[in-house]
Structure formats: C-alpha cells, structure tokens
Length: 367
Ligand code: BGC
Image 1 (cartoon, rainbow, N blue to C red):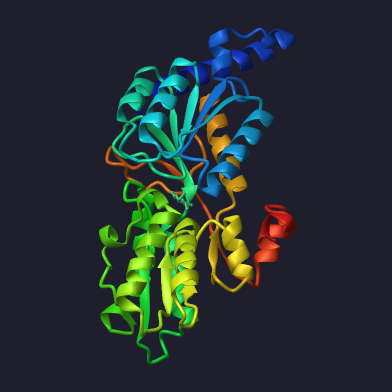
Image 2 (tube, rainbow, N blue to C red):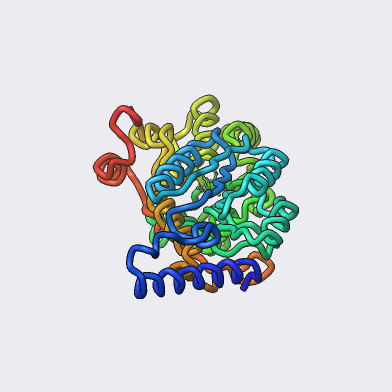
C-alpha cells in the first residue's frame, strides 16, 4: 500500500519483535525500549485530529469523543477546528505535521483540498485516517473510518416510501430535495442512496418535484449551511407552493432540515410535510418531539471514535487495522480500507431509547 505507512508498519513489527525477544530473554529489561520503538507503540505518541467546524453540532461531539478516547488510550492529542475554512484546515494540518504528530485523523472540509500538506505527511511517513468524510485523490490516506453513508440515504428514501405508502397510495405527492456540500464525498452516497430508492416513484409520477430541482448540483447546499437551505426553501415555497401542499422534503442531514423547517414555519400554511434528516442534532430532536421533523438518522459518534482509536492503535503498533469494507470507497488513488459503522433511524417512537437511555443526551439537552 502506501510506502511510508509500510515503513512505519515495518518499524512497528521490528519493535514488537525486539520487545518480545527481550521479554523472552531478560524479563524486565523489555521496558528499556528505544525512542524509535516508543513512537510506534500503541498508547504513546501524538495524534492530530482535524475537525471541520464547531458550527455544526456533530463535529463538537466527534472532536470531544476522539480527544477523550485517545487520551484514555494514552495519546497526546492536538485537536483543531477550522471554522469550515479550507485554508485554515490546510495550515492546521501543516502545523500538526511540523508539531510532530505521529498519525493524522482528518474530517476534511473539502475532500480535494488537502493535497499539499498530505503530500508532506506522506513524505514524512505520517499515516492519515480519513474520518467520516473521504479525502479524495491523495495516496497519503491509509484508512477510512465512517458510517455506512449509502445506507443513510437508503434509509431516508425507504422512510419516505413507507410514510407515504408509495406502493399503494395513488398520489401524486409533492416532494423537494436538499442535500449537502458538493465538496463532501459523503453527499454522493447520501443523495445516491436516497435517490436509488425514490427515483422510480419520480419516474412514474407518484412523486412530483414542483421546483424541477432534482440533480445533485441543483439540490446541494454549500457548507451544509442551515441559512442557505432556508433561503433556497424560501424561494421554492414562494414560486411553487402558494396554492399547493408540500408533502415531503428529503433532507440529507439535520442542518439542512433545520433550514427547511425554519422556512416552513415562516412561509407555509399548508399541512406540515414529512421531513428527513441525519445526525440527531439537538435542535432537530426538539423538532422531532414537536412533530416538525419526521425522522433523523443517528450516527453514534462515540462508536466512530472507538473504531478510529482502534485504527490508531493498530497503526502505532505496526498491525493492520480492522476494516469491514474494502471495495466501496475509492478516493481516486485506489480503494481505501474502510470501517463502516451502522446508522440507525430515529423517530418519535425510539428517540428516548436511542438518545437518552444510551446516555448520548440528557433530557435537558433536548427539552
Ligand atoms: C456528515 C454528516 C453531517 C454533514 C454536515 C457529513 O460529512 O457525514 O453527518 O451532517 O457532513 O456536517
């Protein structure tokens, strides 16, 4: 695979062999390992964690969980947020490299924009884990830890099919579509997974998109911004729904769903539509409880952090990390070995069990 990563693995294996040999021959002396060995040991070293922004709730959770779990495992952590600004993230990653990080865990703002610092990482033998979002066109990426992104979209599509009983009801039903930032590779999977389910109903005329906006480019939302989704929904409502009901809005995630919900609250008097989302962000769970959002897809960031820490441990000890998908995610330089965590649909019927009983939120968080 990646040349430098291989080198690190080789160093790690050599270190392990030295350690076990030392353990066999001289008992306690095995603790006097060289500094090179220490660098590749699980539980010691410095890990850079680059998160896109604090503005969207989930990344705060991701960052906190990663820091906590990495520190519990014994690592020093350099955690940075980049305010959704690509240049800031580039310089943060550069600083992580010059600051001596042994592994980089990166949730990119734009999957294509980290080429230069990642080239340096590769040259210096610093392995990179793509976190949640796949970094594209860089051979520096060793692993990808994420949720099953296609399944997220598929679950949203299936929810709509069931909620409107599309296989039996006559329709037609009016639908609008919102996805996220076009620079986020996940969008292709969220949008693709949902549209694979819904497109046949659009083709047969059971679902009608009155705005005519159906391509990924037309329905994308820069930066996954709530305000931008709200502005687009304002325009769609004004031009198409003055005298029509809107039955359903497919939203790829909660920040876009929130914009849609804000717009509807201000501009729409018809029957409240079915609205999908993803992340179980606090304002959206409140809307779910208030009947303003129909579902969200819960991605337990604690589990993603856990899996990513396992990857870090494996890399640091020169082992191969556990993956469960080695064919889906090609970043343009080849398939990146991936671990996909499982997303769960959350509705009014199971939110207490999934979000409160599991300790993810307290009642106060979502009241
Ligand atoms: C994540 C989603 C999130 C979105 C906006 C995506 O890459 O997978 O969970 O809603 O970014 O932050």
